[in-house]
Image 1 (cartoon, rainbow, N blue to C red):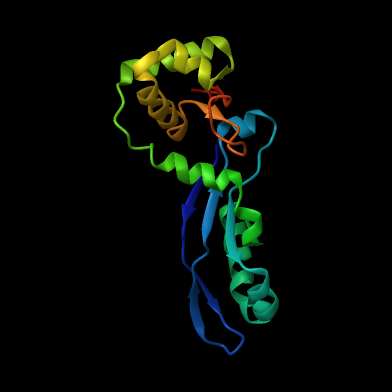
Image 2: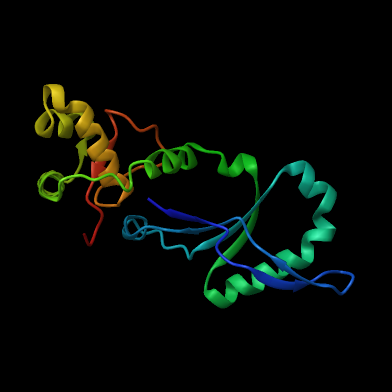
Length: 176
């Protein structure tokens, strides 16, 4: 799972008219160890999100700040992209927002360790299996929240681009 940081930095730039301004990109996306272990090793991505209509109308006016963002990103070892909202309004973004609600949940560390060790020994397990094994019957709802917490805190990983549910496969990220 990647991490997304909103408004990560402020970048000075000079407008076409010569005024000094500051530009704040929308997001910085960093990629997870599991992504890298799968052979995909992109540098962090600085992202600006604009609607297609705004982009078409204002691209000339906005180009100085985006040039400054590309330069700044390159200095940091990042990439910079301008995207329209249809490219980021995805299942992945919905899942990241959903999981954020569980990130700070208080769960027993010992139970978490047992679940993570179990999934590690299996390699990959479906949520439904983990729930049935560790949270039977009346404890299932508590178990669902616990598993979302483990995914949100990167103790377990999954394909964040797919609908989260009982059939979701989870695994322990490499190096953890």
